[in-house]
Length: 317
Image (cartoon, rainbow, N blue to C red; front, side, top):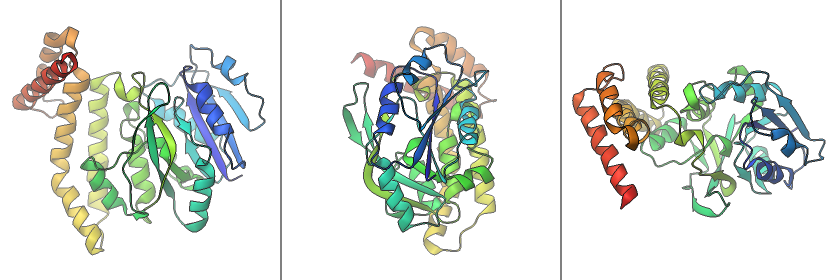
């Protein structure tokens, strides 16, 4: 089998549209694995609406939850039998030529661990809001890391296709709380030797919704994930020094700028995810008290407060 597509499912709202978009692929050599993460919602009712032998439906006895969502990603991987693996969000969609586009990309560049496509960003009614930026056909891990740090790369876990053998050898997706940067680090690992192959064709639709994990949950868990991400960056930079002149230039920029990059991420996480309008004073006191454990000083916390106020004013403007 060429492709295994997996949905770690918890939310019902867009699951039908997600599955429907996958089953309408113009390339048919795939299996669809749906793993119900012990959801309180009626996911069974959604699955029962489809009569397709390619669907394999599993249920977790215990909920992995948002904090440990990568565990469910890797449970999905354990059920896969295809040569290549795609992890889909339960609220996202594929265009009908997603798999055929990647099939041709893989045939053209068969020795890669990871492939990537451009994406449409859609809203709750599946209207296109914008298009993710273009990439070069081939990009080294150092170039991708640096552009990602500079916010010049917009990418999601489901616009990557991985060689399953690589993921198995890595024991699955890199685990961090809330999967915060888990997708980035997994793609960096896959690209560390041969880079990433990219198509300019947008064949994935990422749904930007208020109910996604990236727009909810605990700021403190996100700060823990940032610590884990920073540790991975440090170990990677210390372990892999490129000899290529262009890559060495990106490598030097990453090494020079990564401390400020992670400092900014911590401040913005507190400002945009940790300080709530209804609990502003309480949250401010909490982060002031815990600032040292978050690797921040008083000035950083004050700046986070200012950003939070600006965010609040922009909402009411």
